[in-house]
Length: 348
Image 1 (cartoon, rainbow, N blue to C red):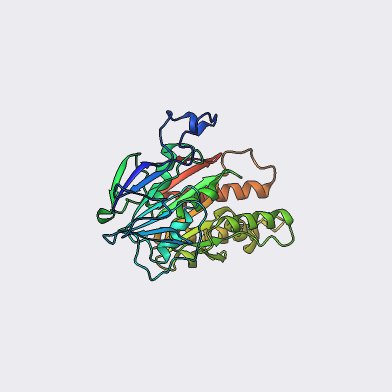
Image 2: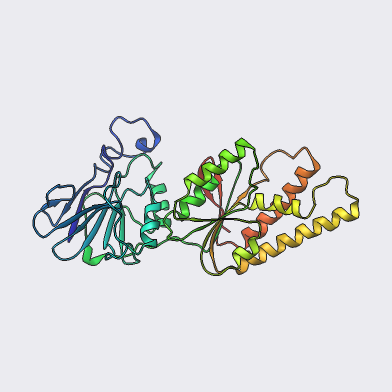
């Protein structure tokens, strides 16, 4: 089956005519025309009644099309309809998907075997929900997908897997509300199996904290598994898998609690012993991070850019977390700073 992508933009294209946003302002008019896809030079993908030889099923995964030659295509744009696709069905050769909308659909399809390494994944319905083409390309690299120019022709018989940017250990640093957690989730959104490791406190009855935890939970894909623990050494030592750790700062605060290391009038000798226990826990975490066989993305607070904390406890925690961030960064293939939702790579 030959697939001609006459246009790959959203309903109004990208840029949207007359739109004053920064995303549209970066592009020349007509950069991506509204999505228009033709099969075998004669069948428009959105046709309600395809000619003989084409089989179309409307499922919760999207519009599934099998061509006369047996090639299989999934078009996943807009709200899903119908029953879920059967996991036992043959995988797709090509997937055309609105990836900026719900990249986690890729992860679910991979988990169920409907997308394999041989499936070619192409982003369509592109528009100003993405800040720029460069940012689109960066995200698609994590998801194993590509964006092709308008007019591109692909064939189901010659699908090729896109290279995926998958460093084994990633450390994302940022200040409060910088977007670091969203960036971590974005990087793993298309993975088939992810364990989200929450290291923060339960929140008790604090409405603000409970609302924040709920927002994080609702943002995560439904098929992800969640583990709440401060035993990161055991988690990192658990064999090959994909982990999102959020975050290192809350883990360290819990360790200070467990080791009774906050300055509270404890005699100097006892406090030094408590701080030694914290240091031992940090060393153990760094060793586990160095030796892990998992693919892991961890979020931590960048504490070196703000004002000097007013309290001894604050200064103690800042120094300890700064040292731990440095140790983990030395053992990471990928480190980045997230500032106002923008990602600044920190290469060696």
